[in-house]
View 1 (tube, rainbow, N blue to C red):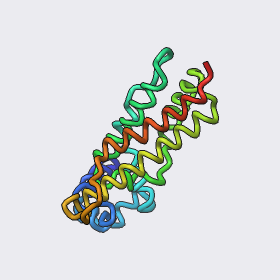
View 2 (cartoon, helix red, strand yellow):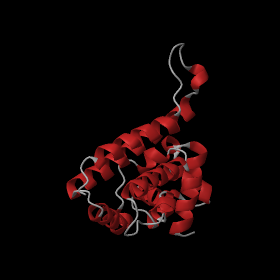
View 3 (tube, rainbow, N blue to C red):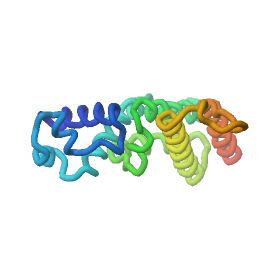
Length: 186
């Protein structure tokens, strides 16, 4: 058993039972160890959840960084879509990620910000757009995953429209990019 194995098993447990049911007791049983042995790798459950969130976000963290000359709009859209896809890869991915601090990704975030600023986006607007897109994406995925877990459109009362989550996400993302474009310096 090692730290990586513990996180992998914890993520598999998450996918099977959901975030509300993940516990160090269940994880220890799954690993065939006593619960206190997990504290060798993670001091608290919060530390374990942070490690799980970091590993779960690895596909997005490996996405290509923008290059000078890239179109900032196309990059911003692709980056946010990558974030959404990654959150959707895990059961309760949005809940696992929400509130986590991307400490391992700070350099990449800085490079993304530098790219936007170099593309003519004022720094404050770039920062707010990245934050807004992140929170919008987490919220969108949270709603999508909750609907998938707790009921489908067949259970909706008459007259309540069925939401196409991808179309709704794309519409909201377009509004963020269009709003940001109004502040770009030529």
